[in-house]
Image (cartoon, rainbow, N blue to C red):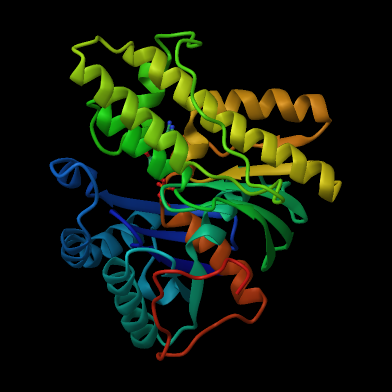
Length: 335
Ligand code: KG4
């Protein structure tokens, strides 16, 4: 079955056609990142308006790229949560109208379930159960993926998401938004070991994480250097920062593997593109005898194909919705 899938939860408008949850026939993306870079972060009102401008033409492009007509589409999948509410509403409203007009099922997809499902597109052999490390701009979760649509959160951040933290640290280092990729590049120029940064532990919750102290430490370091006229070793700070994030993520993921006994792990989300985190995960999983799935970089960030992949399995599980489907800024991945 060919699913037309929509994603608009943040600053990427994305429309894709995916066949049987595993084959990407097209994956059209219109990024607004350059526009939001002017403001150093996503401006929700602008994001919503740009989604409205882009979505109809992008849908035509996704169909044309896939060599499909509207009649070939068997269902419509859409991100309904979590995300910037105005932005999610644009994709959801458009998807509803398309499903209604084509008289096909409407499938609600949780955005982070979509990120995890990006792995199904890259790795045909991957099937649940497995452990997922979902690390993006808005979410940082360790998830027990029991089956395609049954998921349980084992650990999560208590404050900032890992990506949010990368973006903030990048900003104080004078790097453009979104800061994760430029931070990654800058970190390549140093071996680090220069700055002592905090590694927070959540008392009594060994799988939970906290990044706000790390973020504040970088901000304070940068402000202090500015005030006393000291030159920061920006590359070393980027390296030490990424290492601190990686240490936190990888240690929690390994503890979750130990607790669950899983021997398969998949990474997901924009921060899973980070070279230091990827390298550390690879080494740790190899040591633990765990098979690690790391999606290719283009499937780490937001895209429509991942929504089509997860949408297929939601459809098989009977998870379709009517025209009353609402959008939600926050929603548990288990719901
Ligand atoms: O998954 P994503 O595209 O959007 C959300 O669902 O949130 O993730 C975006 C986040 C941003 O915070 C961005 O800075 C971060 O992923 N990111 C990275 C890298 N590439 C993107 N963070 C660290 N290293 C990277 N190479």
